[in-house]
Length: 231
Image 1 (cartoon, one colour):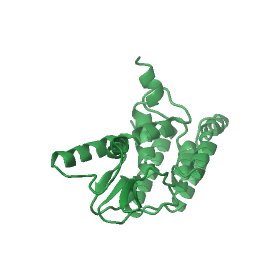
Image 2 (tube, helix red, strand yellow; image 1 turned 180 degrees about the vertical axis):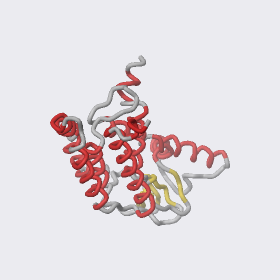
Image 3 (spheres, helix red, strand yellow; image 1 turned 30 degrees about the vertical axis):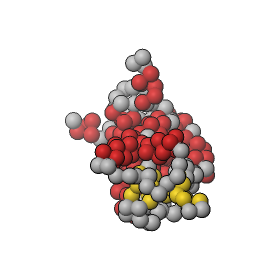
Image 4 (spheres, one colour; image 1 turned 120 degrees about the vertical axis):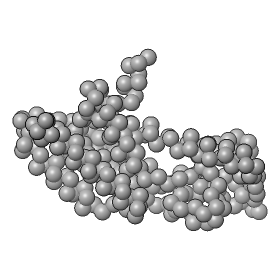
């Protein structure tokens, strides 16, 4: 048991979970992560290399895992998620390269692809929230002049919030009418909505999805590859 707890792979996993837990907590609380967190755990990932049974194999494995780096930086530049999320993925690749406790398939992209799949869960939460509001006879589109198709998309992508916080507006004014607005929200440049009674889409920190994606990687592996194996 003592030997198991101190295997280098388990230290890597534990370090990664601590890093992601701290990052997620801070991002939910402050919506900003200080880069020193990534510097500290990046340094830990370097130190751990020297405790590996084979330093050469460890460096090669980390190098393969860091294939995710240019992809993460490209996604950041497009504004799909923030710079902290990109740095988190890069440091995670060095800290816990392609590690899993499941024995199932993982790749350098597993945490990211898992996170992308998990990030669609708010769609279902939005739908449930809107259906509850409709069942209570609330006119969630009061004051709007929109097509039925846009309204259908809206109930999946957002909800009408009386006191929005950490959310992005998905409505605009055209003339005297409110319109649903599905414009892209840049992760780092778009301001949160604080206007009362507004249709919004939740601004959930992407590091939360990355954390859950990594936990799924540990316990299950790659969602895409391993679900495909069941068919």
